[in-house]
Length: 262
Image (cartoon, rainbow, N blue to C red; front, top):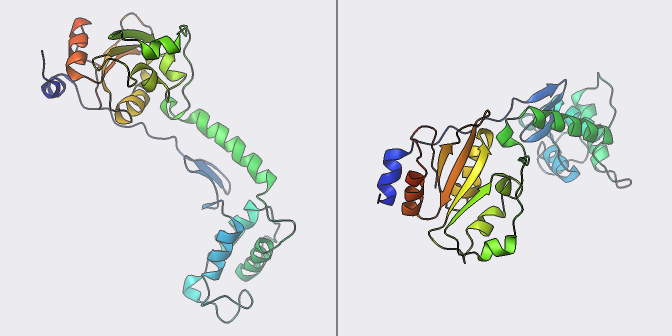
């Protein structure tokens, strides 16, 4: 039997490079990426945060905005004031100067009734851009969509089962990635249990390793699944390296296309 450490060093290639997120979606002053929406380069901020930024331009709290205590080196950009006015739906003249913009923004942020709120128009733009951004993102950065042929499983029996070897469809993982490890590798399950996650689409392999191996300490070998028109893999999982190695050899895995993390 292979020793745990030597087996992986010899037979398993290094992990693939992580999938890069989609390019930012830009429309006029609006930009959306994995961090969310920005207007003119500025993310959403609360009135308190905005006032703190305005006050930072002065030595002490100013008696009036744009007054004598202003420190030129700390001046916020014109885009800063325009962006936050747009976030809160405050209209301003297109040719307004930077000090006028500062007064408009400060007055809005200090308003007590009604309390300043992010513009509903901006929220609508945000939701639209988020939907289009996520639809253009790599599959592994999107929420996992269930595969067909979900098998019926008695989860209570499975959690208490003493079966050492279990086969399950990829949908068992994709429909509940957080609950899968506890169900198949709970504290009451055999330490040498091996689970074969069958027919996992190639696009979700890295996601599976992140959730199962990096997060929960499982070991895995990825085996190309023969006879599939699309690229699918059987993911062999176990806590015990020796049990995993034995099952992989039994299943007749090839070196090509396999990967392990954990």
